[in-house]
Amino acid sequence: MATATLPFLVHDVGAFDHDDPHSQYSIASQTLVDETIEVLADYRCFETPQGWVLALDPVSLRTFLWRPEDGERIALPSMEKNLPLTCKCILSGKPGSSSTSCVVMVFDLHDFAYWVCPIGGNKWERHGYSLTIYDAKDQPKELHVARRHGMAAVGGKVYFELSGSQLGVVEFDPVTAEPNLIFMEVDMVDTPETMPMWSSYLVESCEELFLVVVFFQGENVHKVAEVVVYKMDFSVPAWRKVDRIGDDRVFLLGGHDIGISSFGASYAASACGLTGNCIYFLNHAM
Image 1 (tube, rainbow, N blue to C red):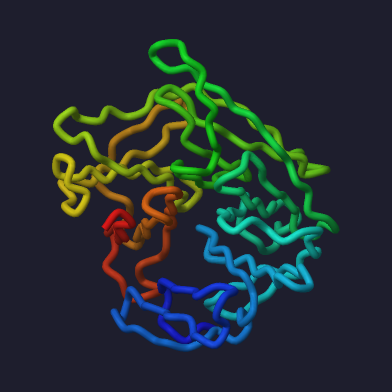
Image 2 (cartoon, rainbow, N blue to C red; image 1 turned 60 degrees about the vertical axis):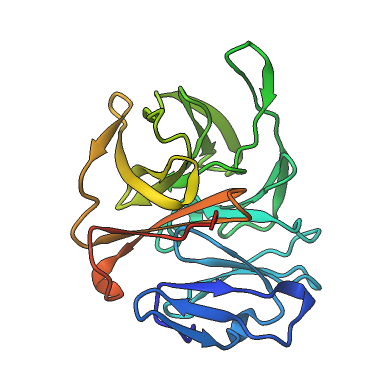
């Protein structure tokens, strides 16, 4: 199990220096612990918004899911090749009694490819894709699913930001877990001209889909001017502005490599001693 109090941030030195410990920073206790998480030693690790960590042995290519709060592990099949240097991982659901319907997805943040494996499956499958949108001048633009876009899983589907008028959706065949990319028409929220710099995050919380927009002061990414939260009304569909996320909920927002990827997760405040109805934001631009 992890040493620091959950939830926590981990700085993993990666495959180049196994002798250095993981740096675990607990958000709840605001303490730093330098100690390697034994079960993850020598493994590459990919966090998920659902609280599980995908671990990959770069030598044997063996993989498993690990849950820091109780040390539970779920075995997955070995990969045929090592994953690229920079990836993003998400689960289509929460492993448990219905784990056969949960699919693990890993996105390459540089190439147009992703890997999928259903829990209980016997093989990782690699998929390539191509998405093209057109700008205001009707010029084609190739779009990456995971890079610089928020992602969240609700109801067994993975949603991602696509354009100003669409959300991307990854659906899975209930029998084969074969992924299918579709699009949902929904207008993106308005962004004031006075706040040209902003970051957006998709968050799943209690089986609902939220969009969080962090506006910066002018072009100064070191000062947050406003944080606005919207909830998806799937009956329309449309984003509805809300002023609360829940008395016992916290949102954890962060990123990677100066905005190359965003991360959003929800957690029960009472389970970790945090103040409810709050958003904790790690500014990756700072």
